[in-house]
Image (cartoon, rainbow over all chains, first blue to last red; front, side, top):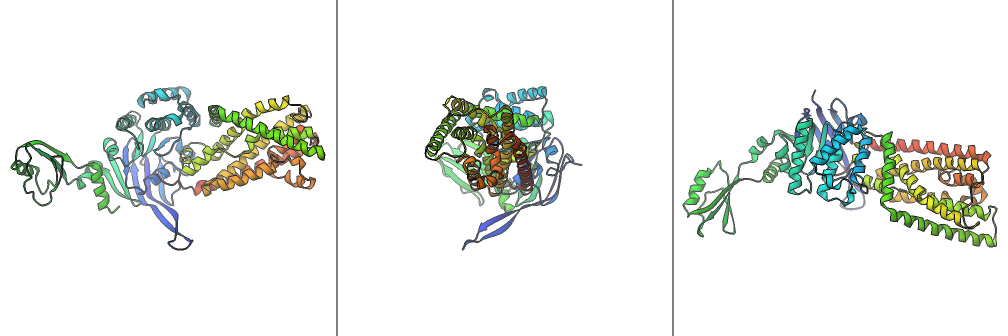
Amino acid sequence: MSYIAVDGLDKRFTVRKKREKGILREKTVIHALQDVSFAVERGELVGYIGPNGAGKSTTVKILSGILTPDGGSVTVGGRVPWKERREHVRHIGVVFGQRSQLWWDVPILDSYSLLKDIYRIPENEYQRRLAQLTEALQLGDFLRTPLRLLSLGQRMRAELCGSLLHGPELLFLDEPTIGLDAVSKLALRDFLKEENRRNGTTILLTTHDMEDIAALCPRVMVLGHGKKLYDGALPELLSRYDTQRILTVRYEAEAGLPELPEGCAVTQEAGNYKITYAPEKMPTAQLISLLQSAGSIRELTAQPQNIDHLIAAMYREMDL
Amino acid sequence: MKAYFSVFRMRWRMELQYRGAVIGGVLCQMFFGLILIALYRALYATKPQAMPIESVATYVWLQQAFFRMLLASDADLLDKIRTGSIAYDLCRPLQLYGYYYVRVMAQKLLGSLLRATPMLVFAMLLPAGWGIQGPVSGPAFLLAVMGLLLGLLCVCALENITMGFTMRTLDSRGVQAMLNLMMMTLAGNILPLTLFPDSWQNAVTLLPYAQLLDAPIRLYTGQQPLSAAPHILAVQFVWTLLLTGLGLLLWRQNQKRLVIQGG
């Protein structure tokens, strides 16, 4: 049996809305998850994506034992999360990117020592782990600083350390890179990869940052309107939507573009022409020779389309 | 078990982070204590009551010293419930009710000890009739301490019930305001319960609010003889049990229907 086995998961929420007229409210039932099934093996790194409100966080909350589903079955390492909550949570770590688990007013080191007692981590194991995490996440400078005085990036790293102290076999990351700068993001990704490689930690990552997924997750699941729409490798998923390329061209002298065939979109900024085209209809070599006929080219760059655009195209097509 | 003790240690550090608040609280409570005693002295000057003024002053000082024990509440916890950060606490291998109970208790106990110590020293230095008197006897003092601890358990249980309701309504103000009002009035903080009409006292002292401070203070001042102690402690105990049971039930229900909204 798989480490995480989810079968026919179902969750509904009741939302009360004010009626257009009058003071009465009406109840609507939102189907946050409908018949979602998947399996994850130990040591996998899985990205979980979907637009806002797709049901990603709901899934994470059910898997971490916080919410009780309305239907379906879930086991993580042989346990049903919401039934054996206390035993289950001992083995998992969670990072909710938008929330905080550390104590606001006290140095983060004190919060960690509370976590040590909560998870009953043996002293030497705790020291070893703390040293390891302090180094990897570069926490050394502010271990004795109260949380409220830390910057967002520092806080996120501190939170991550808090979630990993007890050496969880499964780690849920709910938008862990939200609001981080490029350096912190890259460091965090490296750290997660290393954690997965070294300790065999299974990681389930939900995020809106596609770069995170591309860098970390060989496997990705797409969720929309509470249903699972895709489960497989990211490049494969993207190749379906990755139909366009962008060519930016700059001429030596000011020259007008030649007449381009149908299906090519052109934008011009500061002497650069940006041409979006579909290589399938208009082979790149053909386009370039066409461009060369108009004058001598100083610069030419070809780019794939931005990953966010691809995802947007995918969400559009899936009607999300 | 160690985790629950750890919470105390954390709370202690947290209290020490805000030393200004402690000093402010102490000064404010001293001021209130003096004003109240002056008020009762004026009242006694025209119409003495059955209870001697020295006992009234003692009552007022003990109430003021342990004021922190009464007043709700741990804003942090309520914030967690409101913002959904409670999700993290649900991911801990702990019994949630117990965890929150201990947090509330640590806040009340450490917060009030930190404030009570300087205040009681101050009150001891005041002249008789203004200051605090010693306990009526050694055994009475021990029983009063026991009563105070039971009262602490009782008030924590009360507050956990408030928190249980906050989980449903997401806004603590209503339930909290009600609890605070009941506590201030019926625990004897505004007017010593010993000054209530006798027929009222019979009813009011049976309510849970009177178990918090009024019951131990009566043992301390000798308003209640030692022979009444078993009865008083039994009433406190029953309330503690009852309120804890009720809170546990409420929390268990809540956990089943819990929804953490957004993100």
